[in-house]
Length: 123
Image (cartoon, rainbow, N blue to C red):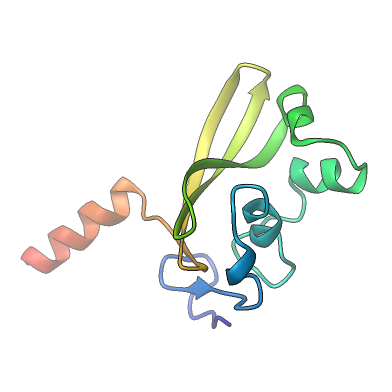
């Protein structure tokens, strides 16, 4: 599983549940991402409300708050999940992106983290 060195910085960790890997596809990847032991998943998100009330993911568009969507998929090896803040049915603000490669989940670095890394390596 994963170990936390700096709880606020999730860029240095990964998470995987090998039992899911053979069945990962467009339809199951959000369920995989919402596993209880995944440190990247926020249990207070709208996806949890939709799941508990047994609604379809289409209902997320009518809610306000944090949600996760499948942004891109290249089955069976690559999936990109976006965490976003929905403010209205047509307005969302991206918060973070996560990529799943061969079943392993990583948080994608933001532009500031990439620039900081490059500056430190130059110095």
